[in-house]
Length: 139
Ligand SMILES: *[C@@H]1O[C@H](CO)[C@@H](O)[C@H](O)[C@H]1NC(C)=O
Ligand SMILES: *[C@@H]1O[C@H](CO)[C@@H](O)[C@H](O)[C@H]1NC(C)=O
Image (cartoon, rainbow, N blue to C red; front, side, top):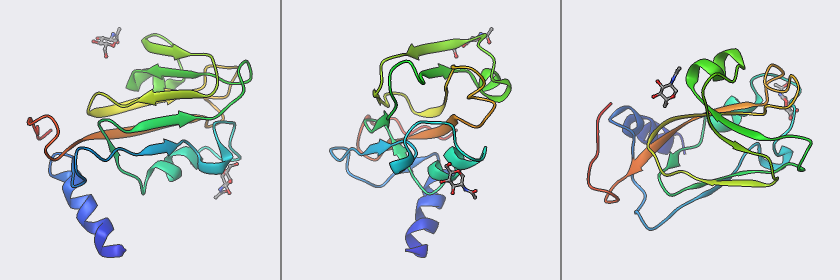
C-alpha cells in the first residue's frame, strides 16, 4: 500500500500521468459519506482529496440538496479569496455530477452564504491517463 502511494506520487510529479488503463474511469463522491456540506474544519475536503488521484474521464459527484448548497467552478484566485470574479461554471441542482475533461488544477466551492470561508471548497489536480489522448505534457 505504502509502495503504491509512493509510485503514484512519483507519477504525479512526472507530469501527472496515471497508470490506469484509459478505459477505466472512477467516480469520486466528494467528501465520501459526508457529502458536499459545511465541514467542521477547513481542511476536510483537501484531506479527502489528498490520497486520491483524479484522471481525465473520471467523474466528481457532489451530493447536496438543491437550494442548500451549490457548486461553483472558479479560478485559483477566487478559490483562495472566496470571491466570484472569474466563475467558469455554476451548478445549482443537487446532486451535481461533473466529468473531468481537462487535465490540470480545478477549483470548486459552494457559493451559498459563507460556506466557502467555512471550508466547503475543493481543489483537485486532474491527470492524463496513459494511452488516453497521446499527449502527455510535463508541467
Ligand atoms: C473535519 O470535518 C469533518 C466533517 O465535518 C469530520 O468528519 C472530520 O472528523 C473533521 N476532522 C478533524 C481532524 O477534525
Ligand atoms: C478568467 O479565467 C480565464 C480562464 O481560466 C482566464 O483566461 C482569464 O484570464 C481569467 N480572467 C481574470 C480576470 O482573472
